[in-house]
Length: 215
Image 1: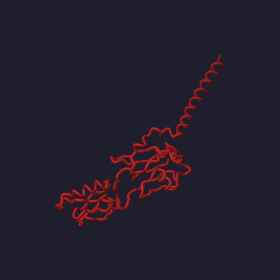
Image 2: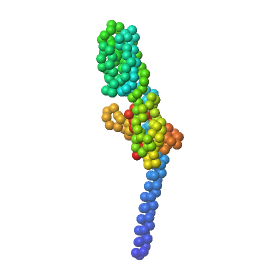
Image 3: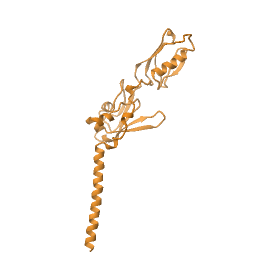
Image 4: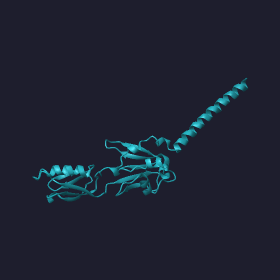
């Protein structure tokens, strides 16, 4: 009788162990396939290439006021995000689009001229503020400036790729938020490297200030 009870208990233990191992194996398999990222709404992340450029510190601007050359200037945005225009004084340019800055300049110029329809152009002549960081387990971590927008893959390439210790399936894009705090966007870099539909979805265009981190 005791032998039967022992065999029954042993069988139950082995069955439970087999179930646990099977679940762990399934979990590992899903992780390998990128399942944890499958439901992330990557398509909802903004693509800066499809939006008007946002002015940053150190960018160079060309400002022209038609028929009022005294306001014309070629200027670099200071680290505090401001610019200085003759007669008008200091104006904030940081985090504005050229159109938004143009509208502010029109209002300011209207205080000095009689023209009802002031024509102003604001052009970004040199991009110096776009920088992204690649950190963690990569070959050459650092802050990388660029004159053009970078994708995750392009930024990682500038850092010479993940090193042998990197958990490439668990990378993350850390994105500062305007209201404070950060958003963490899961990235399976192996899927990006392999290509395919899921890799394309995760190969986001990075925004100024983003960090790509490899644990």
